[in-house]
Image (cartoon, rainbow, N blue to C red; front, side, top):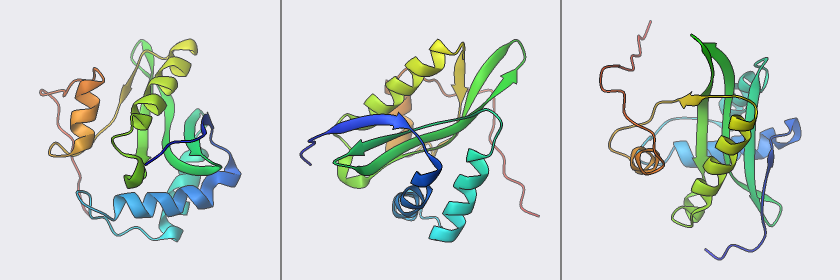
Length: 150
C-alpha cells in the first residue's frame, strides 16, 4: 500500500460513522472473528467517546480514516493511566509502520499530559500481541483477563 498523505489527529464526533465501518471490517475478520454491526460499533464508540477523560486519535491517509486508538484515562493507585479500549488499523495498511506511528504519537501526547502508562488486552496468538511486545509493553503474567457471561 502506497502511503501518500498521513495525518494523525484527535478523534471528532463526526468521525464515528467512518470509524464504526472500519471497526466492523477489522474485528469481524480473523483472528477476532467478532460479530459487530455498524450500529453496535457506533454505539460502543459513542459510549467510549462519552467517558469524562476520553482520549483518542485517528490516522488518516488521503482524507480516509485508516486506523484509531481509543480509550480513557483514569486514576490507578498513584498514577493516571490510559486504558486502551480499541486500537485498530485497516488490514490494507498493516506492515507499513503506521500502527507504530499512531501508537508512538499517542504515547507522546499522553506522556505530555502526565499519563504514566497504559492497560489493554489483546489475543496472545495475534499480530497485535507481538506488536505491543515490540513496542515495549509486557504481558502481566501474574494477572488474568476474565469474562463472565450472564
